[in-house]
Each structure stands twice: as C-alpha cells, then as structure tokens.
Image (spheres, rainbow, N blue to C red):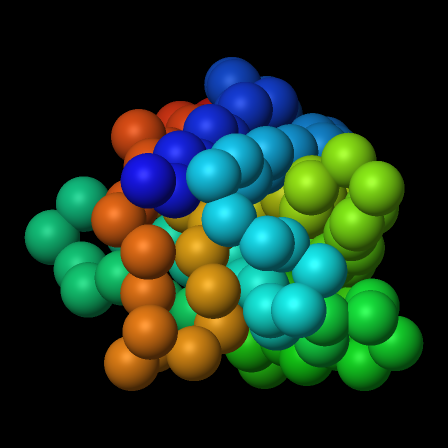
Length: 117
C-alpha cells in the first residue's frame, strides 16, 4: 500500500519562503511523474507543479510560475516544492501525488501553508 507523507508547511509572512517535502513509500517511485497539488478552503484541489519521472521536465500553474520550483530525489523517494515570494492566495493545504490524475494514489494528510502578516 502506498503511503504519502507531506511536511514542511507552516505560517509565513507575505514574501517569505517555505520548502515542502513529500516522501512516498510502498511503490516504485522513480517511474512516475509526480506533482504537487493544493486545496484552499471552499475551492477545488488544483495542480500546482509537476515533474517527470527523471526530473528533467517541470511544469507549473500560471499562478506560481517564477516563484515555485519542484524537484525530486529518486534515491530518497522524495519530491520537493520550494516556494518563494509567497502570497496570501497561496494559503492552502498542499498535497503530492502522481501527476496522472487518472492513476492517483490515496492522498496523504497534506501540509498546511498559511501566508499571513
């Protein structure tokens, strides 16, 4: 059974930075494209950033381009999301999962990111 554990969230002021981590266990990891998603209160979950299995190609939602960077370490079964220049509208619970939305694993608990002064 696949387990996903996200961490690294917290409360940060506008303009600040956070680095999220996501560790996947129970599955072969390095063959799957991965992604970070987020869900703000009252909104649908949205894809924020994706990365190919080898880490060579990334893609981002327009709202985070130039501010967020996704990366992965296949030796550690871990995906990262470096978030810079954070805005209040980035406030959400952040999750990671496969990028193929038709083949998602069970969601982890997510990590809360709150951007507020």
